[in-house]
Amino acid sequence: MARTNRTGPKDFMTSHPVRKQMIDLLLWVSSNDSIEQYSRVMSRLSGCASMQTKDQIFAAPIARLGDFCFDEQVVDVFPDMIQRSVPGYSNIISAIGMMAARYAQPESRLYDLGCSLGAATQAMRRHISQPGCRITAVDLSHPMIERARAHLSGFKSEVPVELVEADICDIEIENASVVVLNFTLQFVEPEKRAALIQRIHHGLRPGGILILSEKFRFEDEPVNELLIELHLDFKRANGYSELEISQKRTALENVMRTDSLETHRARLRDAGFTHQDLWFQCFNFGSMIAIKSSDAQP
Image 1 (cartoon, rainbow, N blue to C red):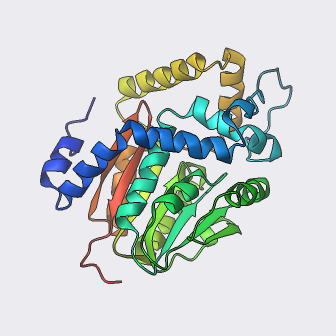
Image 2: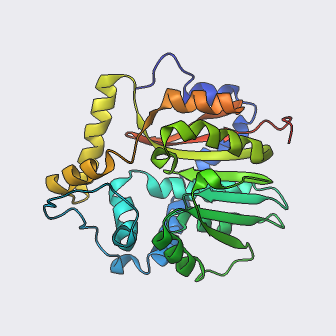
């Protein structure tokens, strides 16, 4: 379904100056071992896979639906919610750890902006071998940060993690080799997105990366409608009722505003990312990698 007016993943792989690293990465992502590793991490982050609290927040009719927020109720069911709602989530988390292993630079910072329960943070933490690295994990939700703190404390690691409760738009990015925005930018006010991406680019070291995962809106309307329907089929197959799907959609419509892939590309390009493309997609969800040029000014 690739549009003819953009460079496709195949073209990117054959022309990109770091294509060998990207090809190796994609092969690594597809390995069964990486998915099994992710499952073990998520089982621990959620307490135990068999003990996860099932997401039933929207199972009964709600007379007055407010805007969706990451409160205590959502935090309690988040591992189940994210797995049943976001196709390919486990693959993305696994790959974030692998990318961190390749791109983390000695004595640098890695940022997880919108860290939720810390799955991406822990994936990076597990894979980093470079000396002197530190992770800064940020979330605006107090319940999320407190639960992430409890979960991450259960893992042994030599990589220190600083958990920060704050708006990611207020965070200073500095000395960074890896920055992760994992399904976070879509919750940022649209008028603040370009400035955030620019600050990330400015705070990255040359050769550093941004991993940007999002739900996408497609400019080709028939394709957009098809991918929306396939995502709804995915949720139905995972046990969500029509009432749950409808009520959650209504709760999200004022707080989650998606961009097209073309908009993301233009924003990254305008911020200074000369190398960027889509590395993963499942229906209307996907993840991009953007690399700061190695000869860019620090």
